[in-house]
Image (cartoon, rainbow, N blue to C red; front, side):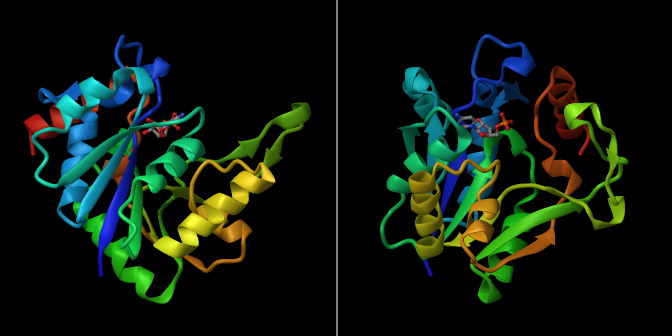
Length: 221
Ligand code: C5P
């Protein structure tokens, strides 16, 4: 079985307030994208990183020390387009593909293992955490309460059979369908997607406080 990974790192990260793309933000002196790629390198034969087109050299430098076959390609306008461009650079003999957000740089590698193990009986696996907040919908000024017990927060890395992931992306592009993750594309086209346990350490770095949290976390393991 050959496993490859696509790391989405082409976002700007404006909410972090830095003058570099989010995935280049350092924690412990190491850029987020390098933390994410190193973690995946433990379970993959190849890691494809999607980076902002104008920062390819900086991203290649950032992942140069990662002990794996790492390829950096330009991402697209949306996360989904970035994944599609990453898939085009994944080695054709890969049977299974993990898709992971560089912004979840500190997700424990055990979650990749869980997701790949659950792929035995599915076309796709998404890590999910229970929702701890009460969630409401607010569109059109109408307040709607959702049943918290039936909700889950979706994380990455998500694991997929390569053929099914490529097919779902091609069909979504043809349909003009835009999802916020890859599992939603497989569900839309009738593939079997199951869940595995996520991990709170896989929280997405979005705001400056998230960087502070992980700086402290790695300083006090
Ligand atoms: O913005 P958000 O945190 O939802 O982005 C999730 C992930 O998708 C990030 O790792 C980001 O770098 C990536 N992304 C991308 N291409 C885009 C937008 C976001 O690779 N056009």
